[in-house]
Length: 118
Image (cartoon, rainbow, N blue to C red; front, side, top):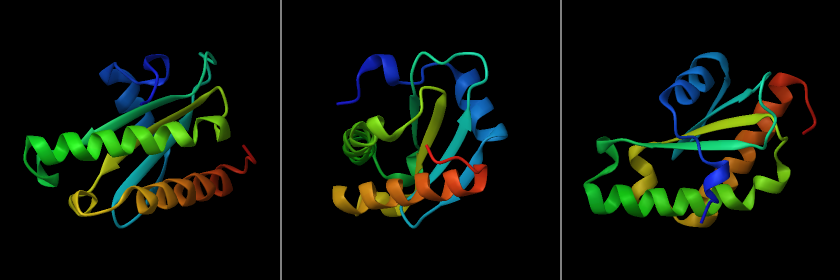
């Protein structure tokens, strides 16, 4: 489970991360990442799982998997990192190790594009 202090809760956080951040697309998810210039209280992660992924049961299952996967990368994030993980319809059939690999690959791509090592 992803601790509450690391979760994005406000729509302004989501919209600023998506609009101002760097995007990395994968078969099962899209990662949007930005650096917060004001608040460095810790990394913040938000999930977007739309109805196109499946019914409520499927969306909730995908959300649980993504929260678990996001928790595994917390130590690799800078305290100013803001991430939005958007699940694509294929994520309903993906297994957790594949989601984790795609998330880690996405973080590596984002860092290369931003020119940061962490």
